[in-house]
Amino acid sequence: MLSKPQIQMQTQSRLKHVKGPVTGLRKGVKKGSQTRQLSPSERGFTLIELVVGMMVIAIAIVMLTSMLFPQADRAAKTLHRVRSAELAHSVMNEIWGKRYDQNTNPNGGVPACDSSAGSACSYALEVDGTPFLGPDGSETRNDFNDVDDYHGLSESDKMLDSSQTYAQAYPRYKLKVSVSYIDSTTKAQKLITVAVTTPANEEITYQALRSNY
Image (tube, rainbow, N blue to C red; front, side, top):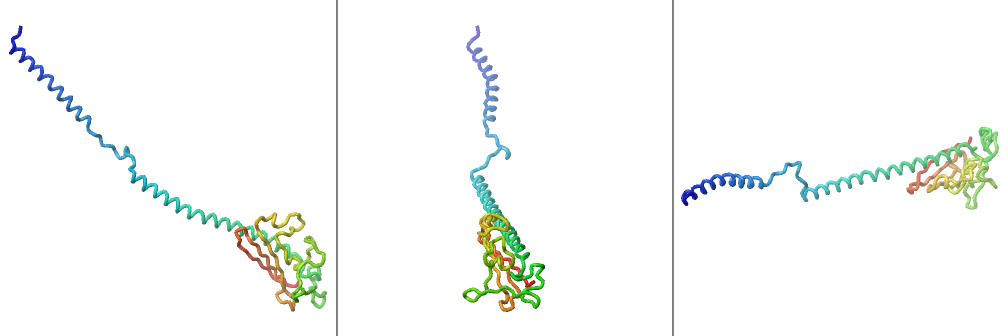
């Protein structure tokens, strides 16, 4: 059997062998428990960064809408003006193809009314003394045969040789045609005015001057 001193020496020797690995284990645990630094690609957004980003997006949306909405409005106005020109030109072309006066020679307007070789121009006065212009007698829309017959034409009237009115063909557009003498004494020229009001409430006026021929 071993004596007491021998047992103590063996125990101390064993503790020395165990102490080395335990210390190393503790060091390893301590080293492994340290916080690892994240790379920039692994980091998230802070609250301040999110707020700033939302503000930038909001400003960009406001700028885009402020640029796009006026463009859309201008595009609509352009379309309305194109339709207005289409309506006015169709009416003006129809009027331009008619003779100058009820008594104008239908064969090319020669001789002209009030000329030495022609008939007298039709000329009547309203009650207030102003020249009478408009359909003659019982003329209906399809019977218009001279320029001043179109005086007073509006969007509620029917289109030529059609059961459809101008208001039906051009919804929300208004039409007003007026014819007047440039000089009521000579009666040599008539001013034709076609006024079209678009759905945007913009009135566009088209005019043509028709001479006695």
